[in-house]
Image 1 (tube, each protein chain N blue to C red):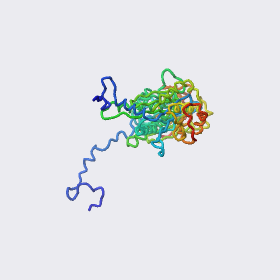
Image 2: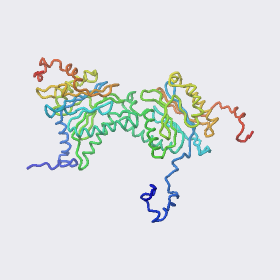
Image 3: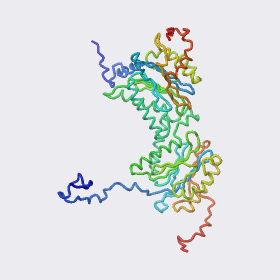
Image 4: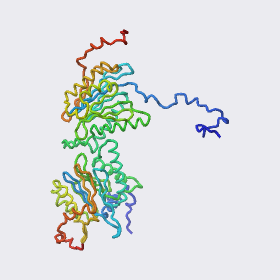
Length: 253
Length: 274
């Protein structure tokens, strides 16, 4: 029987130059439900699809506000995201206490990046099984960063991670030119449309399964859920009842 | 039963004899030489005007009453938006100077640094401003005093805050902070502060104060301090921080227009007894 001998720990390279434990961690991100982030010149938006384990249960939290000026959206192991978000909250608070300054998004992203990378280099540790989108506004304006379990971080104009996120990214790539000049509402609509594109057939965005986080210049990061996003959903998908979008034909409300 | 709690857990005197505490009275006590100043700088004076702040100190470091070092710069530029003035112990000032240098290097290599290709206004505003610096320094001062090892300084931080408005605040060896349109440490708090308050009695008056008015008030204050503060000197440093000009630092100024006519009337000490 073939058995992979190079995936027992995160410090051993395979003969092909791969570190399997890190790749498995990245697989965990792909199992998580999809999250999308976009920035314009004035705003940063996160949108996420929440999952519930069963019909009667509540939905898993996908967007976590960290400090007044930014928040994160997660895809993957929520428990690992909890560790990272607690760390980010501490670091953000420490910046405000020590310097009376809101931590910059590039700085906090670099700090969790370093932390995650250390886990890929020490025997007995494991990589974080979560990908994050970090969005908000700092002294240098609105930003969106992507964080991966490998410790890789990148600044993005728009990004989607999680299950079937390729469809969302395709939407984002097609509309890339519109984002920079978008208004707050337009940006939210783009994010919701991208999110919608990654849904499987017959599923829809509802006030229950969708989360939106918005930050802007002189606007604190805020998480919107439930009835607060009803008007955005209605405005974004106003003609879904008419069946213009092929997948959303099922109507039972 | 011994009813004196301080004796509990100790060898019993009736069994072992009285405790020999003599070794405690040698030089084995806690370090104390860091808890009083040795070489000192005197007053720091500063005041706001409508576009910025003026700050000044003389260039003297005294060893007790002796004018020991006559070319010590007690103003320190942190960046284009903040200048610090140090009064009190000079070695603690030098420690803080090194601390701020390392902070500055860390900042300039971090994500806060403005990138070389885009030197526009928004980029620059990410670096530490005078307010950030004052908050940081006050935490350092409070930490040290809580360790019973204070940094024996009175510090004024002058510059611009996050909105580009004039900022002036003090931090001292106790970690206490204070902010006002004009501030002075040490002897200056008694002699210079009333003079500067005549120009800027409150925040509203700052808006009507020009750079020239503020600079004149501070230079006049330095003169009065030289007249009446025995630990002062007639060579001094003055810095002006403003949004347009950044930091203008003048480190070798000479007091001008001195008049010692008043000295004739002073009787009762020194060589003239009556």
